[in-house]
Image (cartoon, rainbow, N blue to C red; front, side):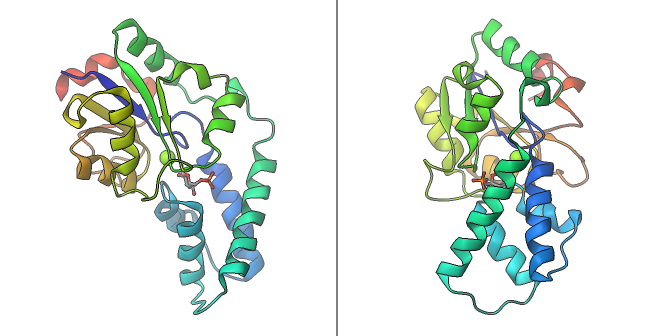
Length: 215
Ligand code: BG6
Ligand code: MG
């Protein structure tokens, strides 16, 4: 029986995935590194530094000092924060509020499991921060998806087992993390890309919680 739902943030609760892409794209352009939306799929769910390292590898950059990498990561983040300054409740993705409400109505606990260090700020902009029983984000973790640490910490905080929890993710690596930790999963997005999810939906608005009976 499902006792908890663990939500990813970017691309599940709010459409910030596109702003992450725009900010990385402009950095890649500056560096003269070709970077497309298809390559961006690899960045979904991974940390800021891992994302930068991935882009540098696309540009065959052999070496860059930690200091210079840090500067690039900071500049990407400042650009990203600029892009999301006006983020508000209208940016919550369709179906999300209904799912949160249904969890509450059915006594199912909810947690956030995100790689982002901006997660709390974003939840505040969306006025959702008080809805979560537990929030685990990029400031609480030492390992990144596909390692299950972020979801394990969330389950531990909620006092539930992985096998009693379902993770909702838009990233392949996030779904791998769920699988690696023994969690059920729902993939939000292209079912061909997210083919390891237990359930695939284009959007949370395409189903209500009854779909969990399929698990
Ligand atoms: C994840 C996103 O949620 O957070 C990634 O899918 C992003 O694209 C990662 O790189 C880290 O985010 P932030 O906000 O700490 O740079
Ligand atoms: Mg995501």
